[in-house]
Image (cartoon, helix red, strand yellow):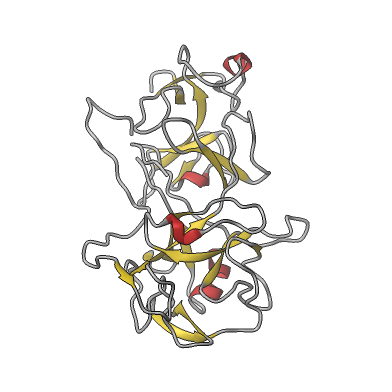
Length: 313
């Protein structure tokens, strides 16, 4: 995912404590990805990447052992121990998991682990981890009356190695290594995982499902759906998906300090949408009453993408 200044697109997931039950015993887990932060200033690149841990101290290695996938990249995760969470190099009938101390260990595979890579799953499955060995059910908890599944069975991966993600089953959505799992109690980065996102178009042109936000990712306007925490205009935020659909966390980051702003279509800009979007109301290309569409010029985002601000700032 592209990064851009002063917008926070670090992502977090619902039900982080439930997710931890599969990943790290009773330790809580939070998730973040693709952090970004303010409009460019005089060509300066103020981009900050927090989507994956700094691997300078642990250069990725390519594992050639026949016990693991030949050519698979590993040794890129902060969680260390007797096994590699990405390479999954434990003995037969065991898998590498993160333990309560945020290190790795080999653990016996459970009979509940049946679902393949990219398959929909429930992180709070009462029978235990529903995903095949080496996969984690990443997503929000399933609730009565909600979707049948809310997560995806995802492998651990190294940043940039999207090939390790494969495609979702059965939709065939290509995965991307763009989410980092964190220990919720210490905010310690553990490892990256893959996501499998439905595509969308902003301003509700092609909306996401209820409870999700459509996030623009690059200069051509590619966008995908991410679970949202439902905050609305002018509410404080830290992560990009703290805000509801139609809003973006502006000025946030790992330490918070952001605010949800309404996303808008920059007046006069060339864009790929029907003319009706130019006359759309708040959340559909326009701004709420008393605000104007004038926060723009974001790094690696379309020239037509902007945010609403109160008159005078």
